[in-house]
Image 1 (spheres, one colour):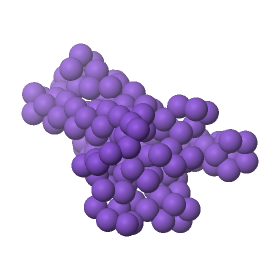
Image 2 (cartoon, one colour):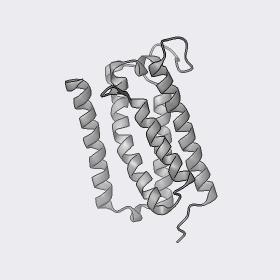
Image 3 (tube, one colour):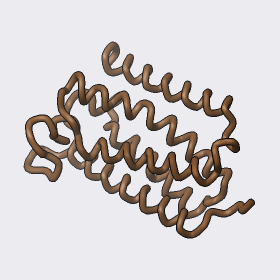
Length: 170
C-alpha cells in the first residue's frame, strides 16, 4: 500500500481547497463590505448578501466564513505539504466535523432566513468533495466505525453549540 498520495489526488485536493478559499474570501469581503452590487445575488431568495449580513452570519463576533477559510487553508496545507494517509485521515475527520455544523447553517438559510447563499452551498459541495476524495483514497475500513461515530458526534455537538450561541446567547 502506498503511503504518499498520487499527484492527481494532490492536485484535486489543492484545487478543491483553493476554490473553497476563494469562495470563503469572497464571503468574508461581503461580510465586511458596506453594500453595493455583488456577484452572488440571483433573486429574492438567492442572495449571499442577505445571508452574509444577517445576525446568523457570525459566531461570537467572528464571520462564519472565516472558519470556512481556515478549514480550506488546512486542506490546502494537507494537499501541498502533508500528503500522506495519516494527514488524509485527519482531513477526513475535519471535513466531517466541519460539514455537520455547516449543514446547520443551511437549515438557518432555508427555515429562518428563507434565503439561500449560493456560494455558501457551493462551499459545502467542495467540503463533500474533499470528504469523498479522502474516503476514497484511504478506504472506509481504515477509518474505523468507532472513530467515525465519535467524529460525527463531535460534529453534532458543535452544531448544537452553534445553535445555542446564535439563538439563546447571541
